[in-house]
Image (cartoon, rainbow, N blue to C red; front, side):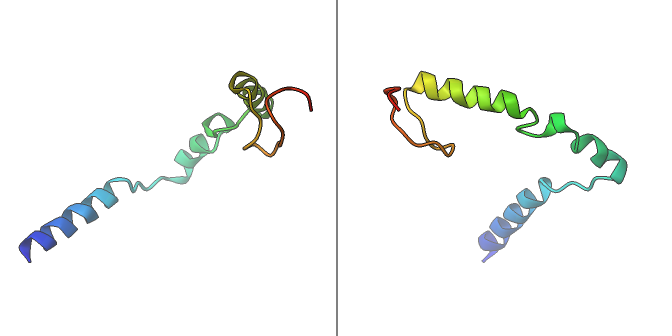
Length: 71
């Protein structure tokens, strides 16, 4: 029973480590376009095209077809 309580305490402590409170003036920096994954849409499109060309396939990004380049 003590092992279960200790395990639950460890799990709860591990979950609380990821929580952080931010102030409104700190959120200003977190919401900048640079902090987003796809802040530059043109670069993301070019990166997807390059990946599809190198992989020899297309798909997974809303485009269907084969990798032969005939479509």
